[in-house]
Each structure stands twice: as structure tokens, then as C-alpha cells.
Image 1 (spheres, one colour):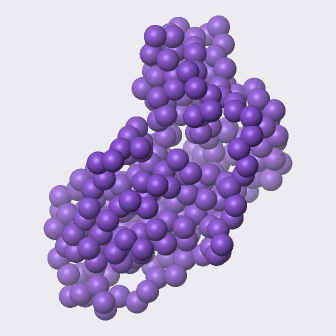
Image 2 (image 1 turned 90 degrees about the vertical axis):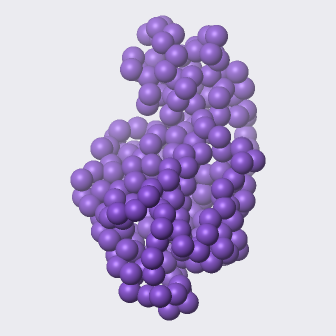
Length: 264
């Protein structure tokens, strides 16, 4: 089966998911189109894809689910018997139902899953949890997934020849946590108002006029993009919910070394 184009579609506030989907695509010697929806996740301009295109779709995992802010976007993608590789990236705790959820959305919209993967990345809440991931081994495994997908497509003339791929997860999906009091990063006096955090925030809630200010804390998704982007470590979380989650992660996820899981 000839693939004329490889499309990368992802939401990646801290760029780990972007790194993984690009690594999977590295094996293909064809046109690669990058659809980075990190800063336009609410856009109504959503691409559709044909049967001679491969789509690699990536999402970070938030609380065992696809990133909530990206759910509607992933549900809106349209295929036409299009081969797809759903990928989720999580912070060394567990991806739980996220990969199943993402694959369900795609199958409902006329995509044909030909492989999938769950990868580990440094947790957005701290370098103590899977620091430096995805590392060289992770990237090589992502490339291996891409190579296997390429071989699978080259070995068939029609997608109907490829057996159904099953991924782990449960129905119904894990419930998302209830929405509590909003919390967002604070800014210390180390801030130079360089504005790097303004462009880093996927929700556009860091004020361009005053980068020390969060304009709407209710919209903060706690992705830590602004915190990781700041060259002066001037942004941080101090809210109690953050402290509790961070301590849980330190106690349970900082000393384990989970590996990527492939479904091919």
C-alpha cells in the first residue's frame, strides 16, 4: 500500500508529545505535514484525511485520560478509511484509559488503527519524575514503531488485510477529577518580563502586557509550559492541590522507570 503523505497531529504543551510523533514518522521517505494544534486547540479549522495518507496523532495524558482541553478537537478529526497511529505520552505514573479513549474517537471518525503506543516523558510537575525522558532509548523505540508501521503498510494492498489492533484501557473511561477552585502559577521577583512564557502558554492566559499576570486562572490546565519555558525559573506552582499531587508523584513515581508500550 502506497502512502503519499504522513500527517503529524498533536497537542504538546511541553513538546514531549511532539518529539515522539516526529520520531515515529522518521522512517517514512515521503511528504510529512505537521499539524501542531498546541496553540489553536479550539480552532474550528480541523483537517480531514484521505485513504492514501498516514496520520500519527499524539496527546499528553492528564489523570489517565486524553488531555481534556483537546478532547473535542480529537473527536472532530475526520478520516476516510485512513490509517492512523494514536500515541499518548504520560509522566511515568500510568496512561490508564487515555490510549483507548483516543483510539475510540478516531475509529468513530473513519480512521483505521494500524498501530499505537504509550510513551513516557518527564512529568510536567518536576524533573524528579522521569527526568530527561523521552531519552535516547525512548526515541529509538518510537522509531522502531514507525519502522514496523511502514513495513505493515508496505506488506498489504488494502487496509482490510490488517488485523484489528487492541489497546489497553477500560470502558467506561476513568472519570475526570471534579473541577475545584482554580489555581495557576505565581511569578517571583526573578521575572525579567522577557515574555517567553506568553508565547509558551497554550491557553493564552499569560498577559502580554504584564507577563507576571495570569489573566484567567480558571483556564489554566496546569501543563507547566510557562514554568518549563522560563529561563529564570520565575514561575512556579504553590497551590495546595499541586503540593499534594507532587508529593504523591514523588512517593510513587520518582523511583520507577516505566518503559514505552507498543501495540502493533
